[in-house]
Image 1 (spheres, rainbow, N blue to C red):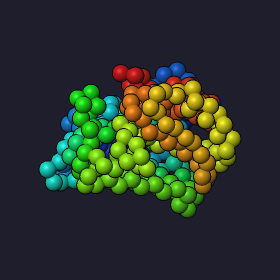
Image 2: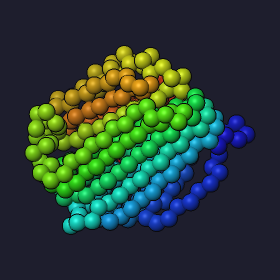
Image 3: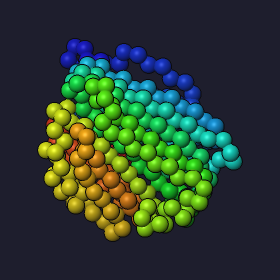
Image 4: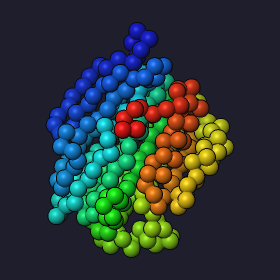
Length: 265
């Protein structure tokens, strides 16, 4: 919540293997919280419940300590439920680095964002299909990723990705992922409710981050600005995602054009 002119922590509950750290934010930036999986990754049958609430008028940035690894499963499914609430006139950035999906993964992850009147949000996810440095590709398993954005009690955007069975065939299909190594989605809900004002500059930012094998696009729908990427190189996609996130936090909120140092470790 906001108290004494600053965003303050009111309540914290954490349990292994998930912990929350609060490093000092850089100068002129907002409060920072870092989620840390102490196990070094998620395995079959792990279940995480993440609940983030930002009180009226407060502002915070939430990220993770490193890329999240979802390991291969022999049957059980990893489940992650993320519930995010942003109060009246508050601002939240939820920008964890990439999630690396090992071959044979079984993951169900659901993210629900509830915004009050005048609230703003910037966040998204990056999915990497296999351990690229080891030459591994995601060929089989289960990936179910769902997002919902609610504003003032109404559903304004929903998105679902479901991959199962012969995932390799889906990824190489030109009508699906066109053999991409990674995909990403970034959404902006500006506090003033006018995402169209950021459309042209967001497209310019994507153009500046263009790279071989990287496809990108951005549109406005249901009061949101939505950016997408498909990339043959996961690192190039990550850089493009970060470039647009930096641009949008500056354009929408006047915040410094940077992400936390953890993004560059």
